[in-house]
Image 1 (cartoon, rainbow, N blue to C red):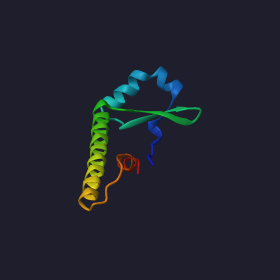
Image 2: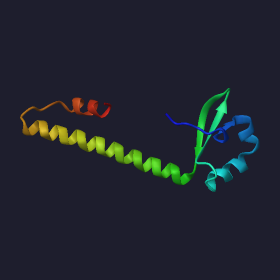
Image 3: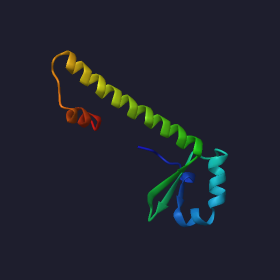
Image 4: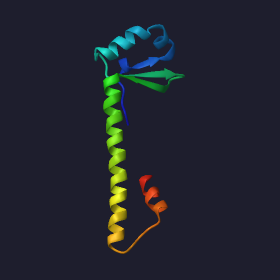
Length: 95
């Protein structure tokens, strides 16, 4: 679970009024993230473009690794003579 410092929790009304200053905080790394609150619940998180790209690339790598593992599992099953329908392999991606 992600934790937030007090200065990272911003009510949406305050965020709207001071958008430029919050954007500057993200750009100059004064804060790593800003959680936008609506009715005292986190509705969105603002991060830098660089941080987003890092997270997006990491997700792509995880997804690709899961896909390759699934393919390898299918190939291993073929070698053992234990073939499976492709739908079973796709279902393993959700696990």
